[in-house]
Image 1 (cartoon, rainbow, N blue to C red):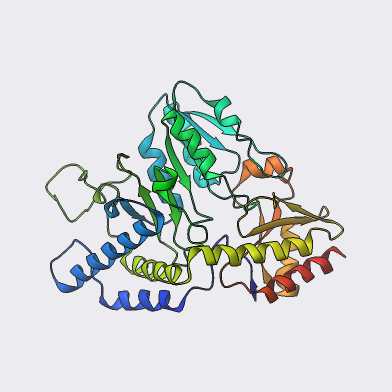
Image 2: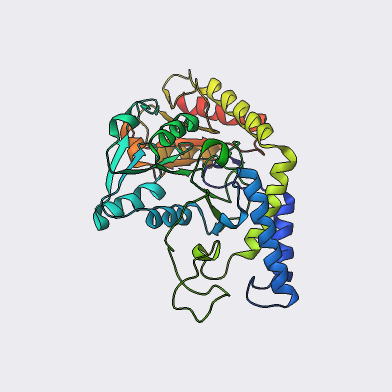
Length: 377
């Protein structure tokens, strides 16, 4: 199988990730739930992972690295924990349902006011709209770093300048870019960074992170066992315990920690350059095939995603053919990105998404492009 569905999850991981998970499963107890060696070992493993991740993303305080099950949980913790009735939030048409559905829920349940920065038919944001959408009660900007449909990257420096100029809270969804694009929270002024461990981070599924900048406070999203202050009626307010009720996925975190070691050994700039070269290679190979429509803006910084359609064929039928005839794994359909599909005019047809990783080869790119050509013919 040629696996080109890395935007959903990376299939191939560094060998040390699986080794770390297996080792942890045989040695780690429950962190903060005992003073014996296996419990202390778990606590140390998790603490080390916090420090590595904080350093990788420019988070100044490792205690503000919160472990979650995935990016969806991270975003829910951030969105439900930050906003109050009457707040106004600016988001964008590029967002995944992990951003949209929590925001819509708060709109319905708490009277949150929402505005969305529009994109054009190439998926490019209208950055001037941020100023136009600003209101006296605007509280925050919530935006993705990279579209999971088009692969377009958001200019974080430009959005950051707007956020800083108006003293807003800034939540960034880095699900598609963490591990493959350098991100420095402190340098960019990001208040809350959310991502998952199983995509570009090359870690296990069931891992994610929520990183908090200085002075950012969130209400607890869930409450329960913490291993400390057991006689208190309320969830402890110190970080990270405030947002980490219940037993953490210590085994998965051990694997994620090993993945960070691998990323550091290769270098995010090296990974980004490799993925950019693969993306450009595939785009150039398919863009002029008769009957093929490619979506997105490839003249500006871009993630490792190329989405396309072949004439008016259903995207699911094309993806099935790629899988059954050519052994190529892609993702078809709506990609949990309804506003972006409406913008592109692909709401009914969907799109076929090809997505690449550090482990994707040039030979796989060429084979996929040839398959698209043959299907189009």
